[in-house]
Length: 452
Image 1 (cartoon, rainbow, N blue to C red):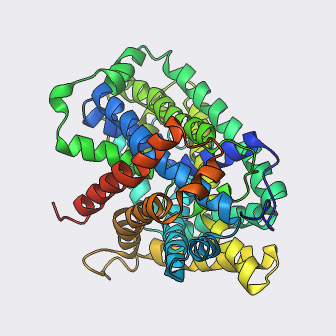
Image 2: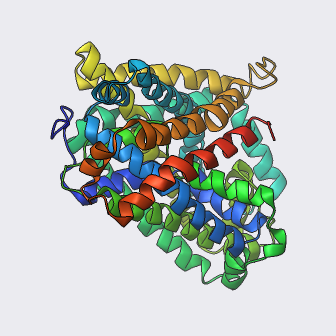
């Protein structure tokens, strides 16, 4: 049996854990990637496939990651080493923890840069900078912003300071207090924006874009896209969910909490689509993928609509909140390891980890402008970090979590941690985590690296 509490502190209750884990899962990608992917791959047909993939892949792996974290009650590195030792296995399993922390560091380094863009756009929207401006001017303004390393550095620095301030305060005073404010605020902002979108006269078009099933558009690529979205949207394979699980009390139901977290994560993505696309269609704009939708397309609509300054500001504040809750979960695993292994105070560990990420982020933002001619494997630094994490580290991390939980950890240990007995629900989870999830993630991995 593991220790009943973590030395770093514990969540005060089930709600705090659910908000924190949902905050980790909900990020910038939820706000624009899921709605666009749904529209591109058959609308409601894609949503159905996605929900199935969440149930068959995402939830079993998330349950496994929370279970391992709670059983180990330490940073991901020390948890994996301790659990492997308990099962009489090689301590090399701690490399899974190192992979997660490395992935979190690399992701946070460029994530902070993009989050800095959202903070800058809060100011721009509030100042009315989008009012009466056409697409060419907004595109030129964005391109000019990305080409200015000093402005990118300033916003990247401000965002990382905010992240470090939360993490340095600890589990109860920092992480929990932040998510208790940020997550309800995020949902309120989303509902306000959906309410406005319903008044545009194009709400039905937005709903059809997201949910009208078109099975003729479903291809093998659509299924792979749904599988990938289901895995990545739940923040799996990077140690964040594992460390949050280590702060969960022993009586809480891992299964029920995981299902609720996955449901809330999907709900945020759906609400984001219902907020975004009626506005896009109302102003005759084309939905574009990724950063173009958020930073080049939507500002045109905000510049034309009534109350555009207010709703544009609220939208970018929403993005900042989503980025902030994800970012603190990415920094936490390394901070926990430094406290455990280097006897650092939490403040010192947070500052050191934050500075390391900040320096990596500087390299990322410079790769967008003054270092743009320097390429590694044909990619800039930001592109390379994105590729390494999304295509290699996270899928491998998720695959190894499933393998360890399903094949290495003894049946009695997982039955004991889930506290639901060796009954049907447990047997379904065990089948999914031993067979369905690892095979599916392996398919995602090999597709991502171009094997097929």
